[in-house]
Length: 98
Image (cartoon, rainbow, N blue to C red; front, side, top):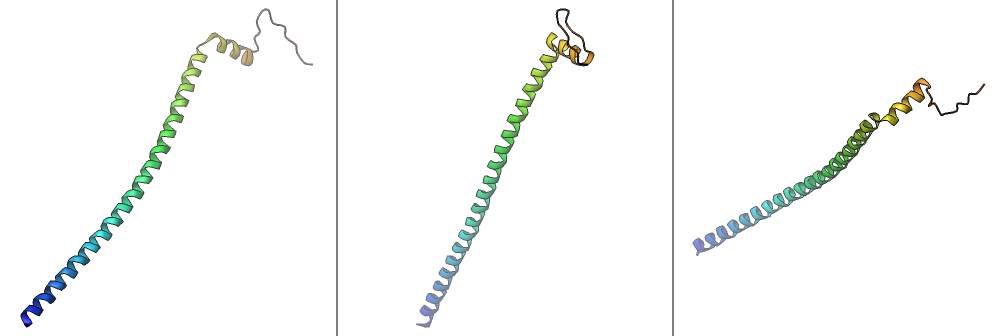
């Protein structure tokens, strides 16, 4: 009779240990999943920020290309000659303040 009771007690103790291990592993896995979810959210926010930054740089690149084309034009040369050298076209009337 004592052997049977000892086996039952041993079986019960083994089941408790197994249950505690399952609970422990579940807590660890939930913690890890939470950390991974938070890290994923951080990466998504960083990705969005980098995409905005990329778009801003592409816009700036386009502006620089447009400005490069403008600097090669005759209009740019004419405007620079007027502003820096004070040159005028032959058919322009110049008024000067005294």
